[in-house]
Length: 210
Image (cartoon, rainbow, N blue to C red; front, top):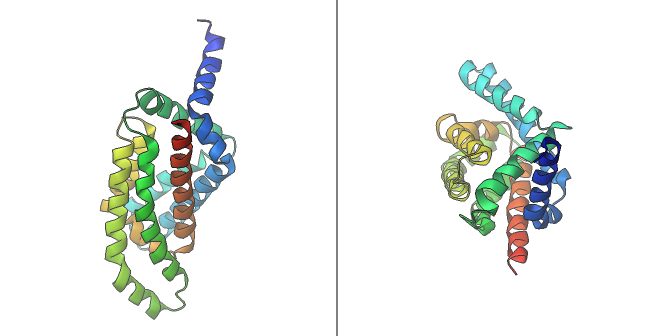
């Protein structure tokens, strides 16, 4: 096959296998997710550096750097890599229906309920009280969420690598605590957007099965 035709074939395959998904959610929403994630990772890096956690700050800066590459025109390269990973490992093999993303909704709803309360906190005393009531629950739900994601993205590739990296930061690097210390607004908005993605992907997948 002529080399120049290969990219067009791959693009055609992506459009065929992911058309129902791409129609269900505007690309601007994915760009917003990347932008929020980049902002949060950058702020976590600054927070960790300020308390002398240089290794943790370096990991957060690395995440921010990788996310920054997905802003602007770099978004399309990331979309290509992720889309091709989906086609290769999930759409063709049908190893696991992406309807399972719908199971994430309950975990995300529980997280959003706790974060909504955090965003209404007005004093340090109220923040300490919120942590006392909610932190263990937020950690438990976060671990459950990543466990479900690993069940969905169980094939090797960039999709699973992203989930594994974040899961490790949550379990070993106190990523959730750092995000909460910065306030719940960015994290709340990010989880809300991710929940929209999961629900709309489930809806699109259900329509394509009809």
